[in-house]
Image (cartoon, rainbow, N blue to C red; front, top):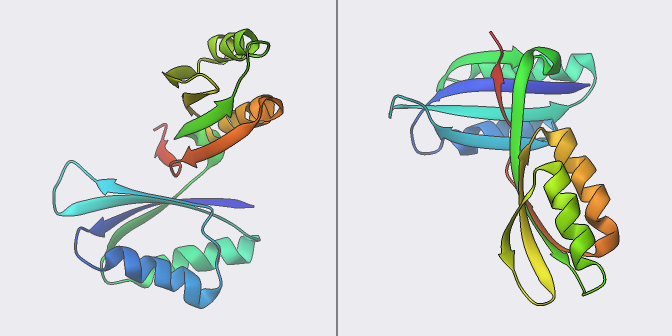
Length: 157
């Protein structure tokens, strides 16, 4: 089961360390973590994605709510939220594969942001599962490097 938590925290030194420490001490896994300021400079928003059984996900929510610097914890459902992630991926190409790779980017909405003689850097902003599918599509070309941001998520309400 996937748990997606939108957590508002005080924007202070050490808060990220406290939150990640909570996960480490309890043996919870963080699949994805994205942090950024909100419209208020003194408050940050964290999107934490974790996996586990129902009990584990409930425990994560409970422990997050106990933290002093945590203002609010919301658990978001995949079906009723908008999720996005950004990926940069460097893919090898040759004269024979270049046009196929360019066409794949065109069809999927990915953008080529850097072109070199033997590789290209491709940018894709999409839902996490779409990014995972794109990675599988380009794997046969030869993936040289991948950088992914953490998932950011917002309720559709």
